[in-house]
Structures are given as structure tokens and as C-alpha cells.
Length: 331
Image (cartoon, rainbow, N blue to C red; front, side):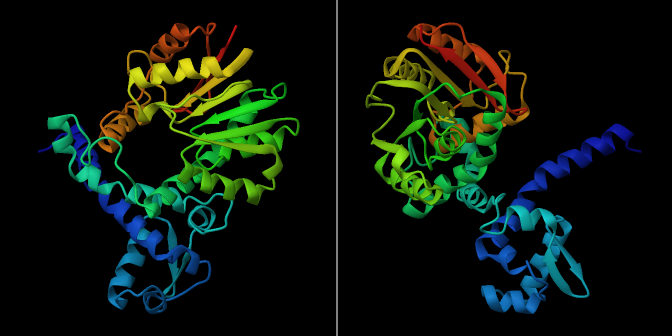
């Protein structure tokens, strides 16, 4: 007879091995636009007709969504649960559909994890070139998750004295938009690749901040960052690159800052003994699969880069259980 521990362990192993099934239910519904339709009660046959699914298959998928507590069913009609209404309907302030779409685009990387573990290289080689559709899903997905993080940063760190922000690898300009909206005297520059800056311009225009944001096109691994900034933000960038590349980036940030300026590095930083956080440890594998170079880094790793560049001693600011800030000043 199995012991209590064995039963519990077996349940846990089963949950891990079948977790991908739940992900694919979410991916399929999100890609088809099901959640936008389920803001009103609808039957499976109507959903099938609207999204181009087989009617029986639609009923099975919708029931699976009920099991995930994303939607509810009453009298044969399905409707969003509050979580789906808030986070999976386009236009809602908590919308996460873009990042869900981006994650679905990475599934093939995980299917071939054994190959990456043998070779140490990403499935498609270093720096896989995304299609325009994949790039847009990724950048807007960063916007989905960045809006909350930007508000949280404003709650834990005082940026009121800064006037000239450089957002390195700023993507959709989420942090630039939030910081400038909170501090009317601040101006910002978003540094990223030209195809990404096109999306950033859309977001800045929508926020009504066109006159306060500039754009610098370049590759952060090879191009200079400019100069004259009193605040530089490097948010969720270092996990995509090697330690050597990150050390070089930190030196370029030092050069771009005025004396007395501040560098903020935001990422999924691990404890120095890599005992956690759990999310950060798993995310390192995600980065290995994505490009072969990425990783997650400890406080000691980042401190070694900032000290070598000439920054003063840094300090840690906790943002969430897995996201921390490393804040340093240029003497």
C-alpha cells in the first residue's frame, strides 16, 4: 500500500507532467479570440461558428476552460469568469493576451529541450530572428506585464529628482511612459532596434507623450548609448545575454550617465547561492532555450559588473518575490 508521502508525491509529479495541457487550452482559446466573445453568455455552437471550430470540439474546449476556472457554464451557456474578463479581453487594463500569445510561440523550444541540453545551444541558434508577427506579440506582451511592474517601481523608488531618462532596450516604452506620466519634468529616450521603436512610437503616441520622448535606434551589444543622462533603466534585459555582454553594457551605461547619475537594473535576480526564487531558476532555462546565451544572475554577479565599471556600492530594492532592482550611482 502506498504511503501518504508517495501519494502526494505522485500527485505532484502528475501535475507537473500534464501542466502543458492546461497551457495549450489557454493558447487555443486566446488565439481564437474566445474570451472577447464570452463577455456575454454564448453557447458552444455559436462560439464554434464565430471562430471556425467544429461544434463538438468547441464544447470540449469550453468545458476545459471551465475546469481551469477561466470561464463558467450555466444552462449550457458559457461566460467569462472575472479573471478572464479582466486579463484576457483586449482593451482591459489588465490584459495579458499578448504575452500569452508570445509564450505560445516558444512552445517548440521546450519540445526540443533535450537537444539544447546536449549542445548548450538554442534550437534555432543564437538570436533567432522573429517574424514580424512574433516580434509584435513579444513586444506587446512585454507591455502587458510591464504596466504593472512600472507602477510597482514608482511605489518603491523615488524618481522625482531625475530629468533625463534613458530606457535601454525599452521595447514598447512602458516604463518611459509610466515614469514620465508620474513626473512631468522628466523627459525620456528609448533605445532599441528600429523595428521595436516603431511599436514604441505607437504606445507613446497613444499615451499623449510624443513631445517628451526621443528615440535612439541601435544594438545595445555593439552601439554606444549616448550621453547626458541622469537616470538609466535596464529592465529585463540582462537575462538575455552572457555575463561578458552584460558587463560591457554596464560600462556603456556608466559612460552615458552624468556624474551623480543613477543606473537601475531590474531583473529576475537570484540569491547568491542560487537557492531561489523558483521563478528565476526556471526562467534561466527559458533563456537558454531561447538563445543559448541567456541566464539569470545573482546580486553578486551584477555587483561585479557595476563595481568594475566604476559605480559606487549598490543597493537592492525588492519589487516582487522574483523581481528585484539593483540601484547604483555614478560618483
